Image (cartoon, rainbow, N blue to C red; front, side):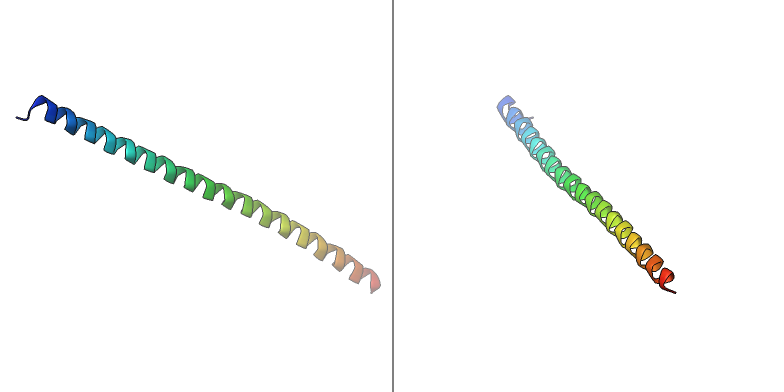
Length: 68
């Protein structure tokens, strides 16, 4: 069995390793959250653009029908 100091160092190393992994996961999570948020914004913008395009199509269609 190892000396108390050796065990203490091993435990400290393990805790440091876990802290580094937690920090890494937090960074990855933040990156994914930002990407997800951007995807939501892009989706919402696309929906808005489609609504505008449909409205324009309807308006043009009404103008054309009124000319007939």
